[in-house]
Length: 227
Image (cartoon, rainbow, N blue to C red; front, side):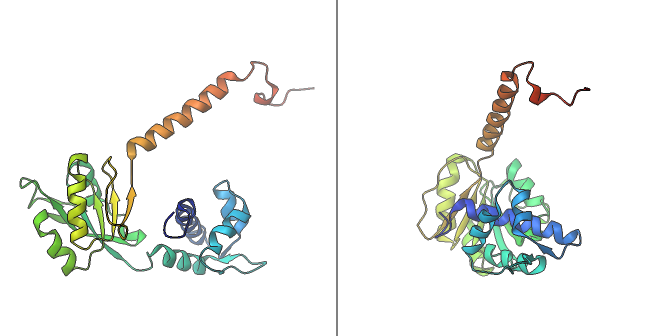
């Protein structure tokens, strides 16, 4: 659960936002719950249930006006204004994240990058000069930074997370393959790339096994034949 909202619902809200933005960019002015549902293999009832967690902002018989829906979903996700983010860790992943230009389009701006390795401090990645992590509390308080991306080795993750909490960080996007222990008022979202790849590998294997298990003469796998 994220607050009182199921995690799956929160994840789908992000998907609805992207779909609504795509439709708007294609010139569509309204979108029905059935259309949002079809894009993700859901039911219209599920879409309406997800939206109902946040109030009623559709119109019966009309659906959702794209611009209005986008504005509401951005407000729900907290991306209706640009939010400042600190990035900690300048390994290969951290450098890639520091150079990525797409965050601002989604309402997030990396404003400071930190590392404890003095050989990296002072170097530039993307638009950012790496700062010594000892400056983290000062910079976060000065620039009102409340979100952080953690891209450090697992062995250092808990210690750095505690530094982030002391600096006033309220939300951590954790790329380290370890569970963090933080106060209840601090939110953590874990991004386990290796786990996601394992799940993808499992899905592909199961589909391959299903294909191989079909009888050779299974008519469902054949196209139409001449009579």
